Length: 343
Image 1 (cartoon, rainbow, N blue to C red):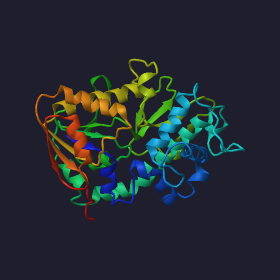
Image 2: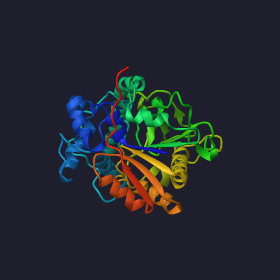
Image 3: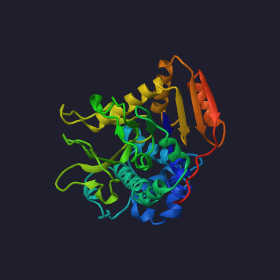
Image 4: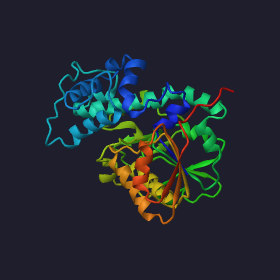
């Protein structure tokens, strides 16, 4: 089984694409300098939160910290003021959702999803294609060693894993047992969703659509005459995941986004609990995402045998976290994830 984090994409794409969470703000400022004009509510939220969070500024901010701040301001709205000083006036007209009578923090969250779709979707398509054609990259090599019945758990929004697995037929973990019994396929779980999952918020009976390519930023918007948006099927690494706590009612023949996500998490726990060998590539077990921590500890509690881990990291910090979760574990340090050679 392979466990995939942002470091796997970062290392595979030659360390100049796909920023890890802590470098997201720095990446926007360096690679998309016009982001403040493009995402003006997001810019206002970063300025606001930087005055309240230590070690944060407008030129260097972490994705999980800003997304968590936006999430808290909305979900704990009975405690915090919902005002967003610096929110734009006049109202932008580039997206239909700006004209809806919704709170500025919700708009900042929608703009953040637009930025994520752009950074981890559209801008990565060409680098991912090149990585798929390259030879002997660490991540590609390890994926190529998988056999039918093996599992990949990717916490990344991007499509690098799917692209590198194209020649090896894989199945996405699905709700109500769909695609979970596989013998000749590699099982793929994406507990944080994907930029290629298209969802409607609220769903009103619409099934999540799994696309072949990333959902384009231009598609993320309110629908004409409807009080709902098309959004990428991704969730934040925050403590209170409303997709699980407040799932929409659904018809039995139309699985909702929460059902699809639930299948990813349940399948991931089962696979981690059963595997003999775990390859960890670029995943740091972040403490900020408490539910993922619970997921690993639940799987560890179900285990009865020793786990052998191949760890691709630059230091021992992640190894210490793994040892604290899995008591019976042997860890082999394998260095950093490296890109492949051009064909």
